Length: 272
Figure 1 (cartoon, rainbow, N blue to C red):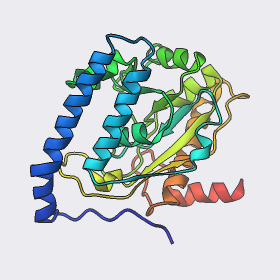
Figure 2: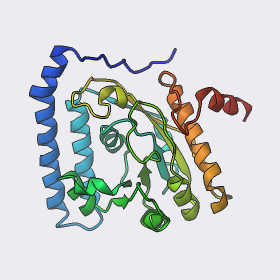
Figure 3: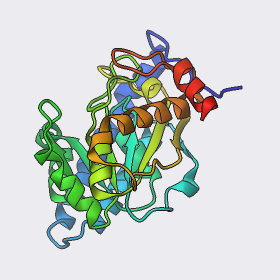
Figure 4: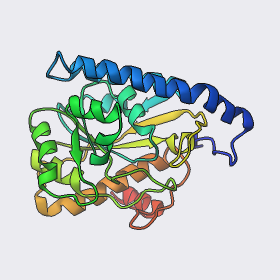
């Protein structure tokens, strides 16, 4: 039986909203400001970003504690197999970033929307710690060159192929950037499924609804024999892999426009 996330009630219970307004929100913003300031200070004294990354991990773990939402990693042994890889995850909530930073045990770079660089503290940290900005509104090959360069230097990369948070908890169309970078750098493309963050804090809400969060690590997609002409095919395989991972640990995700239907994805898995 699937241990699915607890459905988020609408409206939230009065006590949950008061806890968010009076305790969780103030603590979360205070922690973000405090650790953001520490990260900026650390950036003045280091160039490799290791200390800033450790500070980000502490911020992330603190954020998940404030949200009363523990994170469990499923398939953690698959995280350290490759020196560098593109890790691609579904994007359900603002809290996906704290989940990834708190759970993944090594330094990495994030490929993120360029608009995040304008957010106080978060944008300052992204800039000073060497994260990689991409214009998701008009993506181009040149905007992905920073990611390819980081991968070839041995730095793992985290990316959200949907380009933004889901509005309804469904997978939307995947951009081909992760597959392109993995092929160009000749590194594996590793699917990640984040389960529970949509119920915790969906888009356009401001109150946490505590959940047990899962980060599910899939088997790597090999790119060693792939060419750039196979970018779309690899992107489709990635989406099907994330869909299967999610469905194994949550309720069914209906595909939205351009999405992968779970019944189709699972049928292909049984045939392979």
